[in-house]
Amino acid sequence: MLGLFSKRDLEKRSEHFTTYTNDSFQPGEEFPPFKDRERISRYKRLKKSFQGKQYEVYERASALLKDTPHAEQLKTLYIAVNLADILVTKPADLLVGEPPSFESGMPDDSKQQKAINRYVEENDLVKLIHESCIGNGYRGDAWIKNRFGMRQDFAEVTKMGGSIPSDVKMEPIIEHVNAEFVYPELSRGNVKSFKAINIATVEYVVNDREDVPFLNVERHIPGFIIYERYRLHEFEGGVDNSFGYPLQVYKIGAKVATGRDEDIVETGVPQLLVHHIPYKSVDDDWEGISGIEKMESLLLAINDRIVQIDYILWKHSDPNAYGPELEGGGDNQVRMGGIYITVRKDEVTPGYMTWDGKLDGAFKELEMLISLVFQMAETPQWLFGTVLGENSGGTGTSHTDNAAIKARFMPIISKVKRIRTHYDKAIRDALWVCQLLDNEQGNETFKPVYPKINWKDGIPENEKEKAEIMEIRTGKKPTIDQKTAIKRQDNVDDEKAEEILNRIAHDEKTMNGFVSNSIFNEGD
Image (cartoon, rainbow, N blue to C red):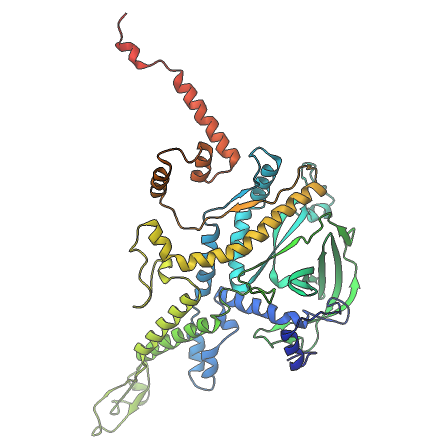
């Protein structure tokens, strides 16, 4: 179904830069807009693969044999191998498994550094990055948003007639935005720049009689946020299957009140508060490329091959038999798992009917498919502690030298560095906007600084080997101060490191106050 566009129209839009002059979120239009349906369908389809629910979208083996007696058996035996989960989780583990440090470039006791430490801790930024990277792995796009407000939702409290506690303060917040809800508008002539970003969500208001859908639109432009709300209508044929997923489509109805005090809010920040993080990107498209999108057909083939092997083994455990007619016949016939075929006594001796299921070939193809998946994922199999097959690249345990281990990890390290490039920019921008919001809408008065993030590669370092190298290079001179050593060793911030140093100084002072035991060995 091509909707309102012909095939040539779609070709034009993929070959040339297209500027849409109509507003997609207006009465009479369809939601989601046609130009975004392929992207949204891909998000939803690949999420099923990540969740191990491929059977809800694909049933290739069952479809091939749907007109045979085996169809129901295959449906019962369907097995989903969830390789997608581990393949997108491991890069997230390496990205922030060892938490990065966030620096302002200012002294530890400066307002800027204290503010950045506060943003990181109160927004659980490391956890946010980890969760975002996992979702980004199967979608290809991730979004985070800045806002200045209260962290807790007091809507139910005020609805009951209560009041917001006086000690609750508004603060800069960094939070996820589901990529399925984001509809960006590109700047003219630049496919990598956004002039506006719409966050559109469908909300069902449920009462005793009916479920009423509404469309909430949060439109971000530099310096402003515009809120709109529309009535939605379901209609016959309002499901688009064009892109491999049954996507629900609505007709946008009349504009209704948002229920907010103000529908146009000035942010005081001269830039967008929504930040895009692609998983992998190219220079001619703003959409990211997911980690499992290119191997989708391979993952389906692996599932089908395992289903086939399982089916063959079940058939081998329940073979058909043949032989002379058994004594008694009818209901007194000896019961067997498979079919018993009667032949004349003088024809052939009793036996079982077996068939060549090509199990060896099936297992070899399965190993090849799994190897291709790991190769396309730039991830060695032994990274997960086990391998399958003879040509799996070894076990990864033959090297103990740190440099050798990193060389073995080079494919996945390079992949994580590529992912880190996109997260580095988006997270630094978000921390920069937090400072702007704190000064514009909060009570802070410091000069904002663009922060720096010190990332780690996730590979444990040989600290002894590293210290020995530094000792040789510096001629046994100190290369690190005590405070920095504590921060790196214990993964603590400046405040905690300072507290530890104070305790050490207190212990040294206390110990120096004791009388030396040597005085008991001296004379008068």
